[in-house]
Length: 422
Image 1 (spheres, one colour):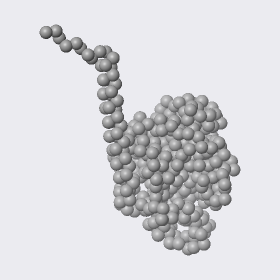
Image 2 (image 1 turned 90 degrees about the horizontal axis):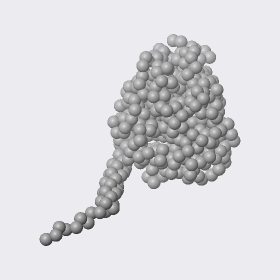
Image 3 (image 1 turned 45 degrees about the vertical axis):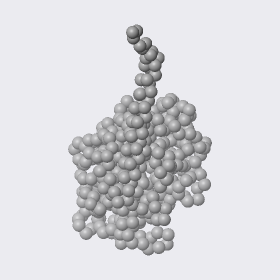
Image 4 (image 1 turned 45 degrees about the horizontal axis):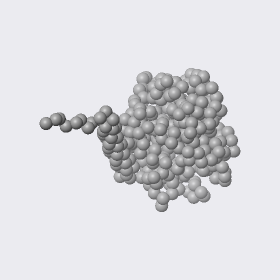
Protein backbone atom coordinates (compact mmCIF):
# COMPACT_ATOMS: atom_id res chain seq x y z
CA UNK A 1 0.00 0.00 0.00
CA UNK A 2 1.56 3.30 -1.06
CA UNK A 3 1.80 6.13 1.53
CA UNK A 4 -0.65 9.08 1.43
CA UNK A 5 0.71 12.05 -0.43
CA UNK A 6 1.70 15.04 1.78
CA UNK A 7 -0.83 17.70 0.88
CA UNK A 8 0.82 20.30 3.11
CA UNK A 9 2.77 22.09 0.41
CA UNK A 10 5.04 24.94 1.52
CA UNK A 11 2.41 27.41 0.31
CA UNK A 12 -0.30 25.77 2.43
CA UNK A 13 1.97 25.62 5.46
CA UNK A 14 2.74 29.34 5.14
CA UNK A 15 -0.97 30.08 4.66
CA UNK A 16 -1.84 28.15 7.82
CA UNK A 17 0.81 30.01 9.78
CA UNK A 18 -0.51 33.34 8.52
CA UNK A 19 -4.10 32.40 9.37
CA UNK A 20 -3.07 31.19 12.83
CA UNK A 21 -1.08 34.35 13.55
CA UNK A 22 -3.98 36.50 12.28
CA UNK A 23 -6.48 34.69 14.51
CA UNK A 24 -4.20 34.89 17.56
CA UNK A 25 -3.48 38.57 16.92
CA UNK A 26 -7.18 39.25 16.42
CA UNK A 27 -7.97 37.57 19.73
CA UNK A 28 -5.19 39.57 21.40
CA UNK A 29 -6.54 42.86 20.04
CA UNK A 30 -10.13 41.93 20.92
CA UNK A 31 -9.22 40.91 24.46
CA UNK A 32 -7.11 44.03 24.99
CA UNK A 33 -9.90 46.21 23.62
CA UNK A 34 -12.44 44.52 25.90
CA UNK A 35 -10.21 44.91 28.94
CA UNK A 36 -9.47 48.50 27.98
CA UNK A 37 -13.14 49.35 27.52
CA UNK A 38 -13.95 47.85 30.94
CA UNK A 39 -11.07 49.70 32.65
CA UNK A 40 -12.05 52.99 31.02
CA UNK A 41 -15.69 52.58 32.04
CA UNK A 42 -14.67 51.73 35.61
CA UNK A 43 -12.10 54.53 35.83
CA UNK A 44 -14.66 57.31 35.30
CA UNK A 45 -17.50 55.85 37.36
CA UNK A 46 -18.65 58.69 39.69
CA UNK A 47 -18.36 56.53 42.78
CA UNK A 48 -14.79 55.54 41.89
CA UNK A 49 -13.09 58.54 40.33
CA UNK A 50 -11.94 60.10 43.62
CA UNK A 51 -9.86 57.05 44.45
CA UNK A 52 -8.90 56.34 40.84
CA UNK A 53 -7.52 59.84 40.28
CA UNK A 54 -4.92 59.30 43.01
CA UNK A 55 -4.12 55.64 42.21
CA UNK A 56 -3.84 55.80 38.43
CA UNK A 57 -0.31 54.41 38.50
CA UNK A 58 -1.64 51.09 39.83
CA UNK A 59 -3.85 50.68 36.75
CA UNK A 60 -1.67 51.69 33.80
CA UNK A 61 1.97 51.30 32.73
CA UNK A 62 3.98 54.35 33.72
CA UNK A 63 7.37 55.92 34.32
CA UNK A 64 8.54 57.53 37.54
CA UNK A 65 9.87 61.10 37.58
CA UNK A 66 12.43 60.92 40.36
CA UNK A 67 12.86 63.59 42.98
CA UNK A 68 16.24 64.47 44.48
CA UNK A 69 16.75 67.22 47.09
CA UNK A 70 13.39 68.87 47.94
CA UNK A 71 13.04 72.63 48.16
CA UNK A 72 10.56 73.72 50.84
CA UNK A 73 8.07 76.59 51.05
CA UNK A 74 7.73 78.94 53.98
CA UNK A 75 4.41 78.91 55.81
CA UNK A 76 2.31 81.79 57.09
CA UNK A 77 1.35 81.76 60.76
CA UNK A 78 -1.96 80.11 61.52
CA UNK A 79 -4.90 82.45 61.16
CA UNK A 80 -3.03 85.08 59.17
CA UNK A 81 -4.92 84.18 56.00
CA UNK A 82 -8.48 82.91 55.87
CA UNK A 83 -10.24 81.79 52.70
CA UNK A 84 -13.06 84.15 51.72
CA UNK A 85 -16.51 82.89 52.55
CA UNK A 86 -18.05 84.24 49.34
CA UNK A 87 -17.17 85.31 45.81
CA UNK A 88 -19.07 87.19 43.09
CA UNK A 89 -20.08 85.38 39.91
CA UNK A 90 -22.51 86.67 37.28
CA UNK A 91 -23.78 89.31 39.69
CA UNK A 92 -24.46 86.83 42.50
CA UNK A 93 -22.70 86.42 45.82
CA UNK A 94 -21.98 82.69 46.17
CA UNK A 95 -20.48 80.53 48.90
CA UNK A 96 -16.88 79.51 48.23
CA UNK A 97 -17.25 76.34 50.32
CA UNK A 98 -20.15 75.30 48.11
CA UNK A 99 -18.01 75.77 45.00
CA UNK A 100 -15.30 73.58 46.51
CA UNK A 101 -17.86 70.90 47.26
CA UNK A 102 -19.62 71.09 43.88
CA UNK A 103 -16.37 70.76 41.98
CA UNK A 104 -15.25 67.76 44.03
CA UNK A 105 -12.14 69.42 45.46
CA UNK A 106 -9.51 67.02 46.79
CA UNK A 107 -6.73 69.54 47.44
CA UNK A 108 -6.41 73.32 47.58
CA UNK A 109 -3.28 75.39 48.10
CA UNK A 110 -2.92 79.18 48.09
CA UNK A 111 0.50 80.76 48.20
CA UNK A 112 2.04 84.20 48.01
CA UNK A 113 5.60 84.21 46.69
CA UNK A 114 7.44 81.49 48.60
CA UNK A 115 4.90 81.32 51.40
CA UNK A 116 1.98 78.90 51.66
CA UNK A 117 -1.00 80.77 53.10
CA UNK A 118 -3.49 77.91 52.95
CA UNK A 119 -3.23 74.17 52.26
CA UNK A 120 -5.97 71.63 52.83
CA UNK A 121 -7.08 68.23 51.58
CA UNK A 122 -10.53 66.73 51.13
CA UNK A 123 -12.19 63.40 50.30
CA UNK A 124 -9.41 61.37 51.90
CA UNK A 125 -6.61 62.99 49.89
CA UNK A 126 -3.21 63.36 51.58
CA UNK A 127 -0.30 65.66 50.84
CA UNK A 128 1.82 62.80 49.44
CA UNK A 129 -0.88 61.60 47.03
CA UNK A 130 -0.05 62.04 43.35
CA UNK A 131 -3.28 63.24 41.75
CA UNK A 132 -4.16 62.94 38.06
CA UNK A 133 -3.61 66.40 36.60
CA UNK A 134 -5.04 65.53 33.17
CA UNK A 135 -4.43 68.48 30.83
CA UNK A 136 -2.33 70.41 33.34
CA UNK A 137 0.27 67.99 31.93
CA UNK A 138 0.18 69.98 28.68
CA UNK A 139 1.82 72.96 30.36
CA UNK A 140 4.71 70.77 31.56
CA UNK A 141 5.15 69.55 27.97
CA UNK A 142 5.21 73.19 26.85
CA UNK A 143 8.14 73.83 29.19
CA UNK A 144 10.03 70.84 27.74
CA UNK A 145 9.32 72.14 24.24
CA UNK A 146 10.77 75.54 25.12
CA UNK A 147 13.93 73.85 26.39
CA UNK A 148 14.27 71.78 23.20
CA UNK A 149 13.87 74.95 21.17
CA UNK A 150 16.53 76.73 23.22
CA UNK A 151 18.91 73.78 22.76
CA UNK A 152 18.57 74.10 18.99
CA UNK A 153 16.90 70.71 18.59
CA UNK A 154 13.98 72.44 16.86
CA UNK A 155 14.91 75.13 14.33
CA UNK A 156 11.68 77.14 14.32
CA UNK A 157 8.10 76.84 15.50
CA UNK A 158 7.10 77.91 12.01
CA UNK A 159 8.56 74.70 10.55
CA UNK A 160 6.00 72.11 9.41
CA UNK A 161 5.66 69.28 11.89
CA UNK A 162 6.21 66.75 9.10
CA UNK A 163 9.77 68.04 8.65
CA UNK A 164 10.48 66.25 11.95
CA UNK A 165 7.75 63.58 11.95
CA UNK A 166 7.41 62.36 8.34
CA UNK A 167 5.11 59.54 9.47
CA UNK A 168 2.38 62.19 9.82
CA UNK A 169 2.37 62.84 6.07
CA UNK A 170 -1.04 61.84 4.72
CA UNK A 171 -2.74 62.72 8.00
CA UNK A 172 -4.47 65.90 9.13
CA UNK A 173 -1.09 67.09 10.44
CA UNK A 174 0.63 67.09 7.05
CA UNK A 175 2.30 70.46 6.51
CA UNK A 176 0.86 72.01 9.70
CA UNK A 177 3.16 74.53 11.38
CA UNK A 178 4.40 73.62 14.85
CA UNK A 179 3.12 77.01 16.01
CA UNK A 180 -0.45 76.02 15.13
CA UNK A 181 -0.09 72.76 17.06
CA UNK A 182 1.26 74.62 20.10
CA UNK A 183 -1.79 76.91 20.06
CA UNK A 184 -4.47 74.25 19.51
CA UNK A 185 -5.07 75.60 16.03
CA UNK A 186 -3.95 72.59 13.99
CA UNK A 187 -7.22 72.32 12.06
CA UNK A 188 -7.33 68.58 12.77
CA UNK A 189 -10.79 67.05 13.17
CA UNK A 190 -11.26 65.99 16.81
CA UNK A 191 -14.23 65.87 19.19
CA UNK A 192 -13.36 66.55 22.83
CA UNK A 193 -16.64 65.35 24.38
CA UNK A 194 -16.00 63.27 27.49
CA UNK A 195 -19.68 62.42 27.83
CA UNK A 196 -19.80 60.67 24.43
CA UNK A 197 -18.16 57.22 24.51
CA UNK A 198 -17.66 57.35 20.74
CA UNK A 199 -16.01 60.80 20.70
CA UNK A 200 -12.41 61.14 19.54
CA UNK A 201 -11.16 61.95 23.02
CA UNK A 202 -12.68 58.75 24.39
CA UNK A 203 -11.40 56.73 21.42
CA UNK A 204 -8.01 58.14 22.31
CA UNK A 205 -8.50 57.06 25.93
CA UNK A 206 -9.44 53.62 24.67
CA UNK A 207 -6.16 53.48 22.77
CA UNK A 208 -4.33 54.05 26.04
CA UNK A 209 -6.47 51.61 28.03
CA UNK A 210 -6.12 48.86 25.40
CA UNK A 211 -2.33 49.36 25.23
CA UNK A 212 -2.40 50.75 21.71
CA UNK A 213 -0.19 53.36 20.04
CA UNK A 214 -1.04 57.04 20.39
CA UNK A 215 1.46 57.83 17.63
CA UNK A 216 -0.64 55.70 15.28
CA UNK A 217 -3.83 57.29 16.58
CA UNK A 218 -2.48 60.77 15.81
CA UNK A 219 -1.53 59.65 12.29
CA UNK A 220 -5.10 58.41 11.72
CA UNK A 221 -6.74 61.83 12.16
CA UNK A 222 -7.92 63.99 9.26
CA UNK A 223 -8.11 67.72 8.49
CA UNK A 224 -11.25 69.73 9.34
CA UNK A 225 -10.28 73.34 8.69
CA UNK A 226 -7.38 75.54 7.64
CA UNK A 227 -4.61 75.46 10.27
CA UNK A 228 -3.94 78.66 12.19
CA UNK A 229 -7.43 80.08 11.80
CA UNK A 230 -9.52 78.63 14.64
CA UNK A 231 -8.81 77.75 18.26
CA UNK A 232 -10.25 74.27 18.80
CA UNK A 233 -9.02 72.20 21.72
CA UNK A 234 -7.44 69.04 20.29
CA UNK A 235 -5.68 67.04 22.99
CA UNK A 236 -3.79 64.98 20.42
CA UNK A 237 -1.98 68.17 19.37
CA UNK A 238 -0.01 67.90 22.60
CA UNK A 239 0.77 64.26 21.94
CA UNK A 240 2.27 65.30 18.61
CA UNK A 241 4.41 67.85 20.48
CA UNK A 242 5.54 65.02 22.76
CA UNK A 243 6.40 62.90 19.71
CA UNK A 244 8.47 65.79 18.38
CA UNK A 245 10.37 66.35 21.64
CA UNK A 246 11.25 62.67 22.01
CA UNK A 247 12.26 62.42 18.34
CA UNK A 248 14.67 65.37 18.34
CA UNK A 249 16.11 64.62 21.80
CA UNK A 250 16.29 60.85 21.59
CA UNK A 251 15.03 60.68 25.17
CA UNK A 252 11.77 60.04 26.99
CA UNK A 253 9.66 62.92 28.28
CA UNK A 254 10.03 61.57 31.83
CA UNK A 255 13.84 61.57 31.65
CA UNK A 256 13.90 65.09 30.24
CA UNK A 257 11.49 66.39 32.87
CA UNK A 258 13.48 64.76 35.67
CA UNK A 259 16.76 66.31 34.53
CA UNK A 260 15.61 69.68 33.25
CA UNK A 261 12.89 70.68 35.74
CA UNK A 262 11.88 68.16 38.42
CA UNK A 263 15.20 67.92 40.25
CA UNK A 264 16.49 71.45 39.57
CA UNK A 265 13.44 73.04 41.25
CA UNK A 266 13.41 70.61 44.17
CA UNK A 267 10.17 68.73 43.70
CA UNK A 268 9.21 67.04 46.96
CA UNK A 269 7.67 63.80 45.68
CA UNK A 270 8.26 61.50 42.75
CA UNK A 271 5.93 62.15 39.84
CA UNK A 272 4.17 59.54 37.71
CA UNK A 273 3.69 59.64 33.93
CA UNK A 274 1.31 57.11 32.35
CA UNK A 275 2.39 55.52 29.04
CA UNK A 276 0.61 54.00 26.05
CA UNK A 277 1.24 50.44 24.84
CA UNK A 278 4.38 51.51 22.97
CA UNK A 279 6.10 53.11 25.96
CA UNK A 280 5.29 56.69 24.91
CA UNK A 281 4.17 59.01 27.69
CA UNK A 282 0.61 60.31 27.47
CA UNK A 283 1.77 63.85 26.76
CA UNK A 284 -1.68 65.42 26.70
CA UNK A 285 -2.73 64.41 30.20
CA UNK A 286 -0.91 61.47 31.78
CA UNK A 287 0.89 62.98 34.76
CA UNK A 288 0.12 62.39 38.44
CA UNK A 289 1.65 65.01 40.74
CA UNK A 290 1.35 65.99 44.40
CA UNK A 291 -0.35 69.29 45.22
CA UNK A 292 2.74 71.09 46.56
CA UNK A 293 4.77 70.01 43.55
CA UNK A 294 2.13 71.50 41.27
CA UNK A 295 2.62 74.68 43.30
CA UNK A 296 6.39 74.51 42.75
CA UNK A 297 5.83 74.40 39.00
CA UNK A 298 3.47 77.37 39.38
CA UNK A 299 6.19 79.26 41.26
CA UNK A 300 8.62 78.55 38.41
CA UNK A 301 6.29 80.29 35.96
CA UNK A 302 5.35 83.01 38.45
CA UNK A 303 9.00 84.06 38.32
CA UNK A 304 9.33 83.81 34.53
CA UNK A 305 11.12 80.46 34.51
CA UNK A 306 13.71 81.32 37.18
CA UNK A 307 14.35 79.31 40.32
CA UNK A 308 16.29 81.02 43.10
CA UNK A 309 18.34 83.02 40.60
CA UNK A 310 18.84 80.26 38.01
CA UNK A 311 17.02 80.32 34.67
CA UNK A 312 15.35 76.91 34.30
CA UNK A 313 12.91 77.62 31.44
CA UNK A 314 13.81 80.47 29.04
CA UNK A 315 12.08 83.69 30.12
CA UNK A 316 11.17 84.51 26.53
CA UNK A 317 9.49 81.15 26.13
CA UNK A 318 7.50 81.63 29.36
CA UNK A 319 6.26 85.01 28.17
CA UNK A 320 5.35 83.68 24.71
CA UNK A 321 3.60 80.68 26.25
CA UNK A 322 1.18 82.78 28.28
CA UNK A 323 0.51 85.43 25.62
CA UNK A 324 -2.20 84.87 22.97
CA UNK A 325 -0.55 85.82 19.68
CA UNK A 326 -3.35 85.88 17.06
CA UNK A 327 -7.00 87.01 16.87
CA UNK A 328 -8.38 83.47 17.11
CA UNK A 329 -6.44 82.94 20.36
CA UNK A 330 -7.74 86.00 22.19
CA UNK A 331 -9.98 85.64 25.26
CA UNK A 332 -13.62 86.67 25.19
CA UNK A 333 -16.98 84.95 24.85
CA UNK A 334 -17.63 86.86 21.63
CA UNK A 335 -14.60 85.52 19.70
CA UNK A 336 -16.09 83.79 16.62
CA UNK A 337 -12.79 82.07 15.81
CA UNK A 338 -12.53 80.25 19.12
CA UNK A 339 -14.44 77.34 20.63
CA UNK A 340 -13.93 78.68 24.18
CA UNK A 341 -14.19 82.04 25.98
CA UNK A 342 -10.60 81.68 27.19
CA UNK A 343 -7.41 82.85 25.56
CA UNK A 344 -4.67 80.43 24.63
CA UNK A 345 -0.89 80.62 24.34
CA UNK A 346 1.55 77.75 23.96
CA UNK A 347 -0.34 75.12 26.01
CA UNK A 348 -1.34 77.66 28.67
CA UNK A 349 -4.76 79.28 29.21
CA UNK A 350 -5.66 82.93 29.78
CA UNK A 351 -8.90 83.76 31.68
CA UNK A 352 -11.91 85.25 29.90
CA UNK A 353 -11.25 88.57 31.68
CA UNK A 354 -7.48 88.57 32.25
CA UNK A 355 -5.33 91.12 34.05
CA UNK A 356 -1.95 89.45 33.47
CA UNK A 357 -2.98 86.16 35.10
CA UNK A 358 -2.87 82.75 33.39
CA UNK A 359 -3.36 79.09 34.20
CA UNK A 360 -2.84 75.44 33.45
CA UNK A 361 -6.12 73.54 33.56
CA UNK A 362 -7.38 69.97 33.24
CA UNK A 363 -10.70 68.18 33.06
CA UNK A 364 -12.58 67.40 36.26
CA UNK A 365 -11.34 70.78 37.60
CA UNK A 366 -7.56 70.61 38.00
CA UNK A 367 -5.82 74.00 38.11
CA UNK A 368 -2.54 75.84 38.53
CA UNK A 369 -3.61 79.49 38.58
CA UNK A 370 -0.83 82.10 38.48
CA UNK A 371 -1.20 85.86 39.04
CA UNK A 372 2.09 87.78 38.76
CA UNK A 373 0.28 91.05 39.57
CA UNK A 374 -0.26 89.86 43.15
CA UNK A 375 2.53 87.27 43.42
CA UNK A 376 -0.11 84.57 43.98
CA UNK A 377 -0.34 80.93 42.90
CA UNK A 378 -3.44 78.81 43.59
CA UNK A 379 -3.48 75.07 42.98
CA UNK A 380 -6.56 72.88 43.00
CA UNK A 381 -7.03 69.15 42.42
CA UNK A 382 -10.50 67.71 42.07
CA UNK A 383 -12.63 64.68 41.34
CA UNK A 384 -15.78 66.34 40.05
CA UNK A 385 -18.29 63.50 39.74
CA UNK A 386 -20.73 65.75 37.86
CA UNK A 387 -18.22 66.91 35.26
CA UNK A 388 -19.80 65.05 32.32
CA UNK A 389 -23.40 65.39 33.56
CA UNK A 390 -25.14 67.60 30.96
CA UNK A 391 -27.74 68.69 33.52
CA UNK A 392 -25.13 70.18 35.86
CA UNK A 393 -23.39 73.47 34.92
CA UNK A 394 -19.61 73.31 34.64
CA UNK A 395 -17.75 74.93 37.53
CA UNK A 396 -14.60 75.94 35.61
CA UNK A 397 -15.51 79.55 34.91
CA UNK A 398 -16.85 80.12 38.43
CA UNK A 399 -13.64 78.66 39.87
CA UNK A 400 -11.47 81.00 37.79
CA UNK A 401 -13.51 84.01 38.94
CA UNK A 402 -13.15 82.86 42.55
CA UNK A 403 -9.37 82.50 42.12
CA UNK A 404 -9.13 86.00 40.68
CA UNK A 405 -11.00 87.40 43.68
CA UNK A 406 -8.85 85.48 46.18
CA UNK A 407 -5.75 86.85 44.46
CA UNK A 408 -7.14 90.39 44.57
CA UNK A 409 -8.01 90.06 48.26
CA UNK A 410 -4.47 88.93 49.07
CA UNK A 411 -3.03 91.88 47.14
CA UNK A 412 -5.35 94.27 49.02
CA UNK A 413 -4.44 92.77 52.38
CA UNK A 414 -0.74 93.09 51.62
CA UNK A 415 -1.14 96.86 51.32
CA UNK A 416 -1.70 97.06 55.04
CA UNK A 417 -0.28 93.80 56.41
CA UNK A 418 2.70 91.70 55.37
CA UNK A 419 0.92 88.36 55.68
CA UNK A 420 3.72 86.47 53.96
CA UNK A 421 6.29 87.67 56.45
CA UNK A 422 4.58 86.52 59.61
